[in-house]
Amino acid sequence: MTDPAETLAQQVTERVIDLLVSALDINELASLVDLNALLGRVDLNALVARVDLDAVLNKVDVNALLARVDLTALLDRVDLNALVDRVDLNALVDRVDVNALVGRVDMDALVQDTDLGAVIARSTGGVGSDVLDAARSQTVGLDQFVDRWVQRLLRRKHPGPGIPPALLSPSATVTSAQAAS
Amino acid sequence: MSTRASPNDLVTYQGHYAGSVSRFIAYAIDLAVTTAAFSLGLAGISYGVHIVTGHQVSWNKSNAVVAVLFVVWQFLYFGYSWAVSGRTFGMMVLGIRVVRADGMPAEPRRGVVRALVFPLSFLLFGLGFLGILVQREHRALHDLIAGTVVIYAWDARAARLRFLARQAELTADDVASPTPTPGVSSAG
Image (spheres, rainbow over the protein chains, first blue to last red):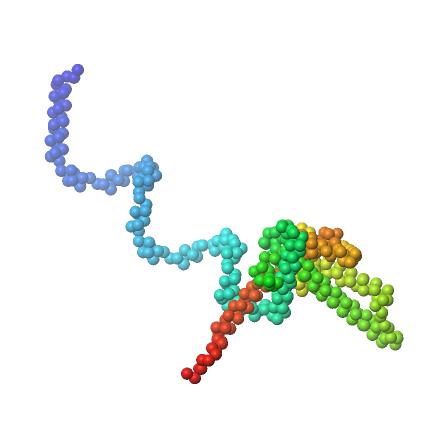
């Protein structure tokens, strides 16, 4: 059980503190404090180390933040030339699959729709090559014509492989053709 | 029915087994070339003998020496061509080529073997050539023995580009110089 005198003393003390605090002007008191000196005594690194930044960032709406950023103004301040100078273009090009890139080019459209067609026609389209192309396409057509009739006479439904196994991949076919030409 | 393959089809047929017409025409060209070269050679020898000795030498087709020389010359022509490049002059014109049965380039010895057994296909009224027509891989008897096949090996892709380029150039010419419409007077 508590001593009644002690209880009374505690109540008096609390009352005095209340009166004292209500009488104090906190703003005035704060103006008297040298905050720089106070912050100088605080170890901010230790303080930051105790903050869970991930939790803080999780609470941040980055999209809303970016929506408020004026990217045009930001880019105006960026020296793109200096930035590009720092890029190793050779390393960048080494990572590009040029063959795949060229494979995506529509050569037919390129030849038909640009001056490249005229260049090819003038550089390679001699009378000789024209005659050879015509003769070869004619004989290939005749070959197929004869072959179709033979298959029909023999009543073959499955004509066979048509191409040797090693030439089944397109690249091998091209290599073979290049070697032959 | 059109018997002319379109440029698109040609690219598709590249690397396929060559058919009978291409091979026959290629052989006909080779035969004409080798016969002409042989005749020229004999004429040259006759002229040389005439210059040196003053005697006139006449070559008879039924002469055994001439026949043997012709066979040897044919073997040298075909054997050397197939061993070195896999194609003769006639095959080059038609854009076909001798390769191994699996499609890889034929070794020189295969070319020589092919030339050696080539006459066998002529036996029994040329029965050995029937395979070119009926066999699935268009292989004649000498192909089966030498382990070879004949394929279309010309650069069909380049030919197609040339075709497209010619088309583009013709179109450009038409646009540059349009044909005047009949009945329309430029005098107004």
